[in-house]
Length: 526
Image (cartoon, rainbow, N blue to C red):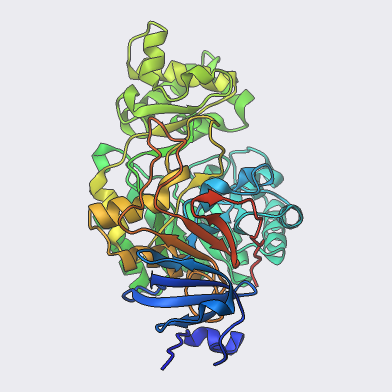
């Protein structure tokens, strides 16, 4: 007897399972092993799609003639499309097809992380929807964007009026469909905010049903305090928390993930709805000014350069940069800082601060590194990859049941700078390296961390799962071949082993060929 599989949580909203009569369908995927996103064991099934929704999930063969198109998927795994909880969608209006994400199997990405993102959000989402997007797009409102709009780059607490204006901007973004608020408390101007300010703004997002995601105030020597602060914000604001791109920066702190994960477990047991997301690499990526003490950046680049050139403050600024090179993102070795995007001298891209020092005939010391950082900022800034994480922490965090996989990747075209390989390879790397090669996760658990876990965090009951009535966001991959190809030396490479990606029922990667179908939707919090 035909077995149809439905999620109870979908039946009320979507009318339960499909009718007993077969077809007609737009698409039929046959012969695949279905890994449905729940963590349950995979099973052989046919899956039919109609009008952008999953119409049937059957463990007995469905009639091929009832479908407009049939994909024969013997040997492949059919999973829900991957949901990326941390995506830098800044280039979306220039790269609306989002090919670098879609080719990884990502069908839904959450933008606006780390306190950034556009304001006003509603107008931006309207523009994206009118343009058409290659994957489903959701968004957060960024605390740094809100604070900069109201207070500029001031290093001080807001006045009562300024706080109310910031709260109004958060409320406006939430009304426009934001899924919550993000902070980047290691970046400026967010670094200048105290706990009370962040709690007040997070509480506004909570009142609208939103979540809170946090780039911690510190991920190195003060990591434990950074985690504690994020958990306190969740508790005090009454808001679900995501410790985003959770990691342990710098050799002195390696191994501390055992403690941070225990803190998350303890917070959950006490009633704070906390989880993390993670990318599967041992290097970070951000602006070169992460090596500058935040106090020196107050007021913006011009004010920073005035401090650097000041007889009174120049030595203190340089000492702060040296400290960060030795103890934090610099890893105490200029070889660990790899320049990724240098618009004013692309010949530096892919090389390290050590390589730059050698080119200039300078000693490879932290003091030289500080001067090169200052020079980079003076010329217009740069982005860099920081090789300062430990594999043991990566695997421990990944294995935790409340860790979702997320790229922290930026939409990109081949040839644009020298990006972090996570922009091209996050999800296939987990499936190929950490599931098949390392055995850190089972296949079913890895898929859960890419699908239902992040979709449920966003409250999207019809995404991130294979069930009758759910959105037909699907990915077919070869479990024996799926792998990332992007490397730190040669990052502009699409992954292997993902022949089909389906967005809202539309085949967008077709037997390995990308199609600019623009089948995505701009999804607003309901």
